Length: 367
Image (cartoon, rainbow, N blue to C red):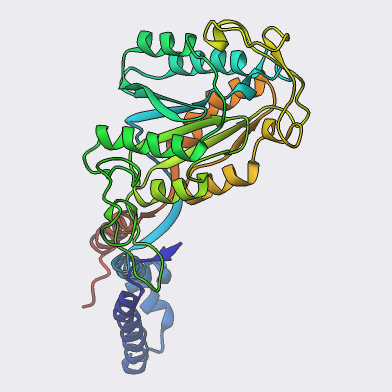
């Protein structure tokens, strides 16, 4: 537990002073007490009341004052707080490496099925947008509640060459900016305002210190990729822009560390057959054999950490389904400091009422 205004704990001196005065008064009364030779007669006159009972009311009152003193310092606890998500941008990698068959039947087909289930599981209030990226990034479907439009776009995915993860993040930021006027577009968009304040989106910074803290946007980005950025702005640079706007990104690294050959269907190639005598298949290619078929986990972890999201890994279709199914549990709560002073005030009020009630019932007011 932490305190927002710890200096106000000085108010605890008041109940401490009252306790000291009460103890001093008891001792003074003992010194002034009249001595009787017949103690039994005095006990009979006073009654069988227990001596400790007369201290209970004042103890309750002092405890109440102490709790009020603590409440004035605004105690806080770190806990999970629900965060509403008004829109989800799905950024999907449709690079040619998504045809790798280490995930059956291939990565793209497995991802399509998982995304269909994810879309169908969201409530009607959450708008979903779809960003597709390979050699460039595009907003395929603006954030919408029309599930049929989204599912149709997912069914019609085609692959391309290249992987532009950074551009996909910036395109997702722009999609959110169109939806939410409080979010500035990215520097790469025509309406970007990154020149203001020396920080993307006009977020001011202290030249010698960290960026000014911004509030968390209710929109999130779920980024699914199976490779590494091959061109354009880096994922880390794009993540910095997203973080400056309070946008959380949840990257998912998809695929195994031992990819096999790529086999695209006719639909995944856009109805075209690549001319190399290999039909719809393909070798591992690339200057270093298969490195572009492997997830750049370091970059994705950095993206998640920078934006306040979380990185997930899925090596097969079942894991991908599980990650997407469990994603709302991770997205809808974040660690925040929650003030609990109201609880201290409520408890203090209860103790004060109990103390006053016992005073009346036991008739312990000083004579």
